[in-house]
Length: 378
Image (cartoon, rainbow, N blue to C red):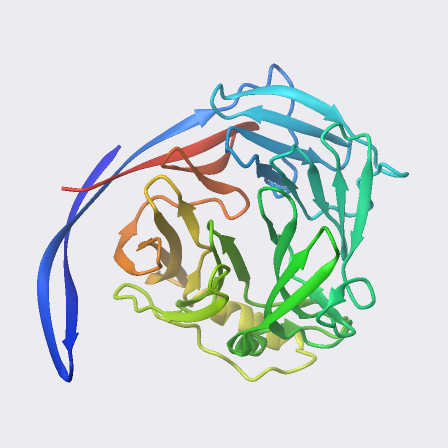
């Protein structure tokens, strides 16, 4: 499938000399097309672990292999993404000194082939042979540096740098019945167990979207973290914006975007605790019809970010038809292009490899990926 689009962008260039400002506007042609196909993984007549949609899987730093942890068996499935086949299954232990632990929320693979398993307020690091394991506890009294307050936790699915020495996460309140306020960015040195906290006060506005019942269970908007070579990008599902932390210059920049195709923010509501059943259902129904921003996905080969968003398109009877919008940014998160598209990405496992977007698909109980190849230029 091939779709050709030509978009005329107006780029404003400003030059300054003393007190004189001269602005010129030059037209530049932005050409964008995609080719889409589906790639199926050969599992050698085995059943792969699909119960949680590859939520406990991750890429090797060179993006040649996908590691999928089956936390029930347990074992580690290793898939060669160039050959499109299962090449190895590593047995793991559930309990004991080399156990993966009672709860697994995500994994990471380092350049040294170490396996990092995200548990509840801890990270278990296995060596390349899976014969040794160390545990790094997260929380008050476990990390040196900036103090973690009682009840502060990390959001699920942080990112770890390629050599496994540093972890980057969003930290928030998460103590029992207390409504969790998202607070900022945490930089953790996994070698000497130190933490540095970068407060982002604007994230606290996510609190207004939290729906909580009398048992303390919450539902709210998502926050995301992405990493490039030198930058960390924090964004949310509620607002058309991003916070960029430059790790080289030690600066935090707030970037606000505008869309012609979706709203730029969800509509907030006063937080009530606890919600009645009727209130919760009304809030769920209301927010399901509003804009939802996805995570930023970085295409290293083409030096561009992609982000998929969703908003109300039209009503069909009593049902809402949602539209999917793709927004493309350059490597500095300058917005280049947006358009309504018929394809999407998998929230659980999507990534760029060799300049193409891979999105997980369960194809008749077989592991597969929808592959979207972009073409840029005139």
